[in-house]
Length: 191
Image (cartoon, one colour):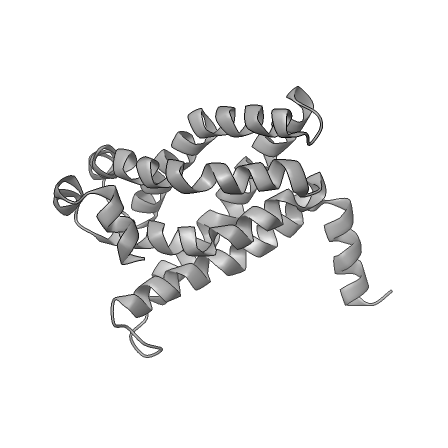
């Protein structure tokens, strides 16, 4: 059995690995895209920043998302519109704010910022980010819960998150003080 065949078998047997692999590629790419909007190029990219996105995406986002989707599937089995609405509603109120809070906190800590600065960033950026996310992700979640087979849900979300992660990378790079005065709609138009 060749290496590619072994990888396919592992991805089929362990769907979390597919999610981790997709997030380890898509999140750093999103960081590089956002850095390109900052005016950086191949010579000036912050490769460590992109590496942090890959680490966070593959080792935190993929496992927590996989866990949430597994729990949601057990609690509300099926893929009807009614079940999709319930999962989407619960996700929007529970997983989404936790994921956004974790993003700002953990990414700040990975940047070696002190804990109090990481918490301040969460406080400044969570609500504006959540408002934008709540206008985008419920539609994607409904598609995911109603049309995508459970084994492909984490990779599907990771593909959809390419643009979203560009937005998160943008939000992560702006000053906390600037977030307070800018509206989420204006911030979304930047992307």
